[in-house]
Image (cartoon, rainbow, N blue to C red):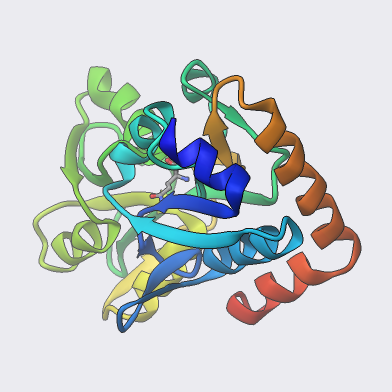
Length: 228
Ligand code: GLN
């Protein structure tokens, strides 16, 4: 396909959804964040030019499957289900789904999500795992952007939000009256998605990731955005 040939010729197209701070978000017109910088560092390692495509989260895998994008970096959790559609690189970050509630909420643990209204971002692992609770009477409200779910929570429209820990911290810091529960809902790992069977690109990406891990670049990028 076009994109794959371009990548071989020097252009590396990354698909992402820039609504996920600190991994990817907008700074003016630019997409910045941990994933954007990791992708740039990989492109530099490979002598390629990075191009970032900002699309809906649930369009990223289709875009890779169709060959319009070469790789997906979007704080994307490795799941068995997604592995049916794409191949994943070695993982580059640990993550977890966290529960956000109002400061005065009676929800204190993952068990308490049964029977309440929970907001998630459409198509994310938060959506997938909370949807399992629908059988227990939980209502799932799906939003296009994680921050919209957090806003709905602060407006009292829903009872909790399940979302990845790092964007949870950012969104809670930007919104009054909310807190993150200590207990995680799930533990996950992020990796880079490529077209199934594109072992040439996958090996290049894994090689570049290893270099960036070994020479400290990866840690430096993360430290820039996540204060220990
Ligand atoms: N880690 C979650 C997932 O892979 C959320 C990613 C995101 O919203 N960008 O589904």
